Image (cartoon, rainbow, N blue to C red; front, top):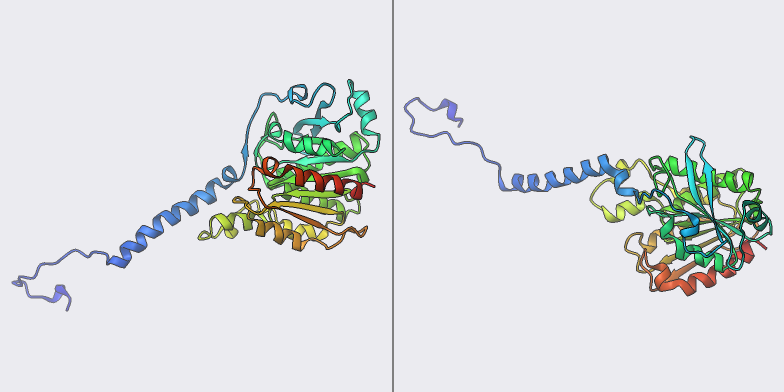
Amino acid sequence: MSSDLLPPNSTSVRRPLRPTWWKRWLLLLTVPYLGAFIMLASFQRSLIYHPFAAKSLPANQAGFGTGRAHDVTARTEDNLDLRGWLVLAKGHVAGTDEQFSIELSKGRPVVLYFGGNAANRNYRMLEVQVLTEAGADVLIFDYRGYGDCSGEPSEEGLARDARAVWRFATELKKIESRRILFYGESLGGGVAVRLASELSLNKTPPAGVILRSTFSSLTDAASSHFPFIPVRCLLIDRFPSDQRIRDVSCPLLQFHGTRDTIVPICLGQKLFAAAPDKSASGIAKGFVELSNADHNDVMETSRPEVSKAIREFLPIAVP
């Protein structure tokens, strides 16, 4: 019976309502969950992109030796200047802009390097070395907001940056698309796959795509780290590579470490499964498992395997 109906002289004392034990536990679980939810929703791009800024990153101080690296700048469609390096294949040097242009016209493969979500181009030297030792020239640019480039990174912004690098190579430097390959590292794999997909649909695909430690989609990668948070409802930048790679018509080579703790190998395998079995020219796709590699130590643990596969892939993609 309600205490409001008790007689005035009743000795009963009205007690304050207290939450039952299960309500307390629900409160204890809900508050941190909502906090994590709000944090991910509000600061997701700062969690995705980790650029290292630098006042300048001159090519002549990059450690490639005299005459092999050259400073280059590409202009984006939204008027940002992307700065980077042109690094000639091992054994080739040039002292002037004209000599670099002559070197680029000699028919070697040219790799456009798309880096991961952290640091800047100065931290990609080992992989650039592997590519140049395999006989390729390399164009490596920093994304907007990275290194000595202005702007703020986002999925659409990085897509604009990739298109600017492609225009720089094909229109300004006059490099034939049949000689250009993409190298996408981690999140850069999402950038490379998107550009390769767009170009394939436009019937102007690159010569090939090499992907290292990349994901099927950013939502898959985020879900693997935050399984109890609905990241698929939260993410603005999604990088759905497993959908886009279906349209890529050029040869494909993938590397992934079996010990990868940032992008589990199952996500690389999911991306590989979504790709066409063969390129438009009939070249079968290839996947190389690196048994000793995590995410950020591929060159330290598996450089011989990576180097061998790239050396075999380049002449197939650029005969």
